Length: 325
Image (cartoon, rainbow, N blue to C red; front, side, top):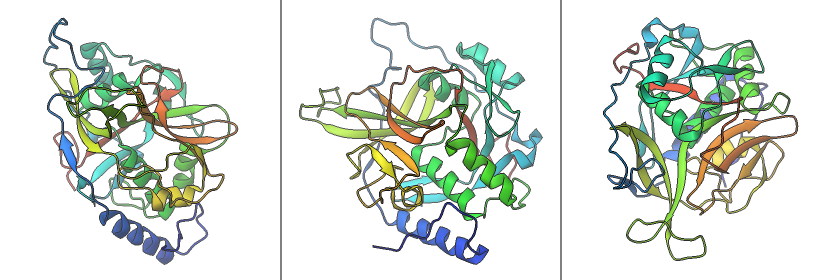
């Protein structure tokens, strides 16, 4: 097994952090699994024949070119197995209300009022928004909600000390630590954010089956908004840790599979609690943290909604309304 050097610390040299980060990228790129874009997904958001067909909704461009460049970090382009994603701007704060957010919220009948503020500053963000609503909000802004893999890559980039803002300047050590603390710091108030992943256990015809029945377990991610409906990319689940337990955060960042799910190679620890995906056809992913724990949970109800449960905006660079790199 490759030695794990990804420490949740900034005590290493910059050269060592860069070497660890390059090693992580190489290892994840070697993983592979089949990817199936889903044309007719079995999702709570898919209308039944008896329901009215969703209306076309125009997309508002969240104008990154007018945003403060110091409020975003550039997540480098990656190819994890057969799953690629482009160079992406990720906000250092959870999504808060502005005129564009309000416009999308009204168009899609989504919550758009600020209900909480971040632990580490006075930045306010939108809560009381369930998983489906949060995905639609980011997609309605022409953004891309972070997948579990991107969420871990985002944290790993911050830990590496090599995160750069939209102007190409390195984030300071204190700012990197602040964002990590915001997402995973074990302290009150409790806060959380949705990730772009849900889990399905389906038969050969793509229909849900009971967890003790015969079926195939899938992860659905990278959702698109088409005619007001969430349409995912569906993949067979790679081997993963089928146990909920405390894990070493460093090992989660370096040894999770390319779908962003911890494996049996991940070391035990007290850095982050992993809630395993459930085969109940009613589970989604999020990060959360409070006074006694930090979580990567893959067993959350998509209908959950709390004032301090929000979502983070991200958008590929070069897209309309975003600065070109």
